[in-house]
Amino acid sequence: MSLKGVGKLMNKITAIRFTKARGKRVNVFLDGRFAFSLEAEVAIKEGLQVGQELSTSHIEALARSDHFHRCLNAAARYLSYRPRSEFELKQRLYQRGFDGDCVEAVLAKLKEQGLVDDIAFAQFWKDNRESFSPRSQWLTKLE
Image (cartoon, rainbow, N blue to C red; front, side, top):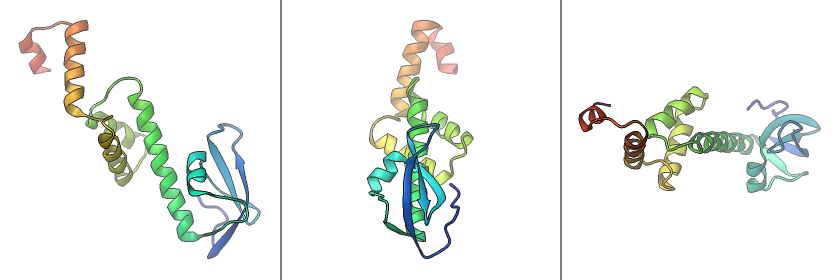
């Protein structure tokens, strides 16, 4: 997220508008100028309001929170097609440009919720493989 127009110690929110392209993000204007965009969920969770003053450290915290939510949403979208192994999910998130700390935090949250489980994934893969492309046990073990 680029922070345009952010330089003072305290910046006042002058407007919060939904983006035109996707209604899931909001543009935040500080001191009358566009500063950054956030997931609408993050803006609501943080209680952002017009007239509120934001410090540079608060803006950076908002950026980290937005990055985490974007990473979490990307992971959820990828998991919506079929179960994935931790390795597959981690690889995909790195390919999408998310940093290591964020990816690890998202994986920890998904594991906590039971959405990423390598043992359950292996069982799913084995059952799926046996149903749609049967092979001998020996060949299945090799895969």
